[in-house]
Image (cartoon, rainbow, N blue to C red):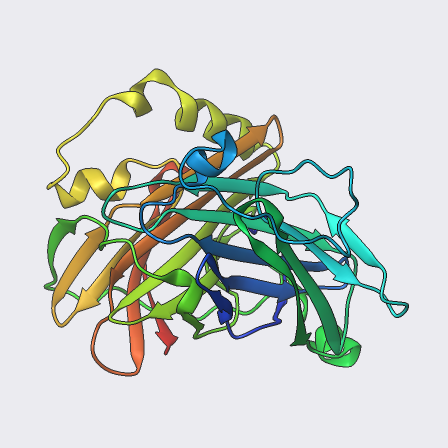
Length: 322
């Protein structure tokens, strides 16, 4: 997941790259920066063919796909991803994060993030999973040029913010996250931006994807300096493990460890629980990436109430264009 302190440039609008009977692959998130290119992919197998079965070799016999670019000694059992250089040679990348989900009602998925060296203008992305019969596939991705990336990148500590007072008279309620959706077929609807910041703490919208009737959003909550040690203690302390009433908006807002968010629907603030969360930290750093999925509100703006009580960031109103 995206945890850098620099806002990058959206490198790909998202959506399906490959659709085959044995596998579909799409872009969840792609961002270009001067240090490199980060791409998050979601691969989905047909219902009834789980990733775990593929690893064990269970299920109907599958004829492996031939190898041209993968080395013969490669023994991976998941989706492999790389890039072609100017000579046509494949450079395979190790993922920086990976998670799989099997289910009986939802097609099993494999979600994985890769970081590539800086690439501009165009990239030849290589996908392979020969063990399930998925052939090596080259997809040419148009990318932002170097000049566009240089103009677009900025530190989260210097990026502009546009926060407003929260309207008076709102009613509040808690809501769970929406049902899982086909993120690999969604579309990125806004560039990364800073939603809330003060001194050495910030809340960043690193991804916002529209997928049918729902929106999926990644929020990065980050602290640096002396405050980080205190946030780590409070975030990972025993009191944070105590469950609370899931239907209490005050508890959802305050639970942490990262920022909390409510979607404004008229005069109602609907506090949404994160469906995924990853935190890390040290004496002088703390970061938390959370994924939220919720029904898309009507209109061309997403109005959010953003707060991070553990870090002392009070509620603010932020309007994000859709």
